[in-house]
Amino acid sequence: MNFFSAAKSKLDVEKQARSTFSLIAAELALVEEEYRRQVSSNIQVIDYLGDYLQSSGGKRVRPALLILANYAIGGNHKNENVIRLATVMEMLHTATLVHDDIIDNADLRRNRPSVNARFGNQTAVLMGDWLYMSAFETSLRERSLRILDILTRLTRKMTEGELLQLTSLGSADITEDAYFDILRRKTAYLFSACCEIGAILGGASTTAIDALRDYGLNLGIAFQLADDLLDFTSQASVLGKSAGTDLTEGKLTLPLILLRNKRPEVAEALGTVMFDGNYDRISRDHLIEMLDRDSMIDATRKRAEEYADAARKNLDVLPETEYREALGDLPAFVIERNR
Image 1 (cartoon, rainbow, N blue to C red):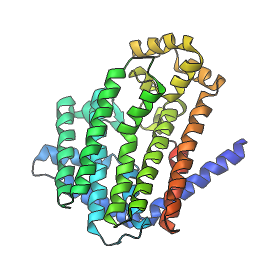
Image 2 (image 1 turned 180 degrees about the vertical axis):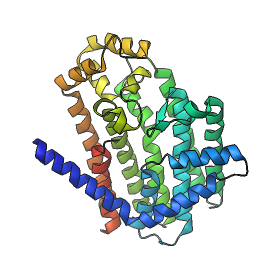
Image 3 (image 1 turned 90 degrees about the vertical axis):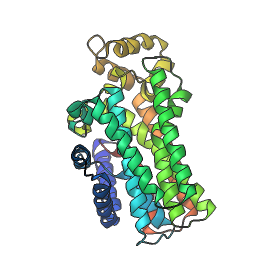
Image 4 (image 1 turned 120 degrees about the vertical axis):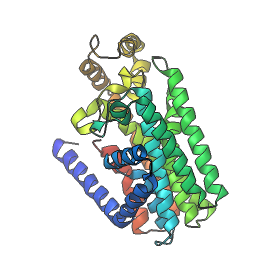
């Protein structure tokens, strides 16, 4: 693919993404209103922090997935439960980001100081906990043990993923299987739960629920693989946080795992960066050159595209509607996005 066709492809993807999100723009606006209601409190510090988090923005991919999954199986467009649960998923996602930033000592999130950087770790921990509890309080209104079971298992898996990652921090010998296990728990299961709950709220068949759950899982894996690539290929000003931080935080992502598997001698250099917590002795540019030379960026992108293709195939059992088409467009968006 030459430069002009690649640029055209990226523009097409961005156009499709705008079309996808505009399809449910009214619903996403309702999610924003519901989010504001859910994070408002008569305790001033909580109200202020809720405002700060909401104004930080975000792509709102997770609530969009729940809504699109619901509509793709013929769900009622006036079902207030859909908006409420879409908001719950965004609150759970926000809570994980707040806690992740504490663990990673991150200073930036979406081009703004992270909650922990601006207000301190103690405040950030408590705000993350408050978001979790508020999300579950809202979900209880559905009186659905099935949905509560999904959310309970989801939060357990996400916590397990964080703990598993902590145990592997600084290790240059993490396996590919271990990496994908952490990825699924920390990222993909949330995507999967959004789609599964959206389908359940619409009264979908078991076949459709299973298909959308699998679609979300494959999409979530593709999303995180693309995120790992952005850590190497994007600039901090575009990414919304410091670039190249995964390795300095002690995390070995797929491109580097593939490079280490091919060239075991590189493990020492990777260990140096993780131990130092910076690129003073081994430059980021040098690592990028090695990744490019051995086509590890391309190999990781290919793996992401394979999961994206699998996600699209999961949709084959659904009726052909504009909402199924929108879900089919999302895999390309998560791979081609620049942040």
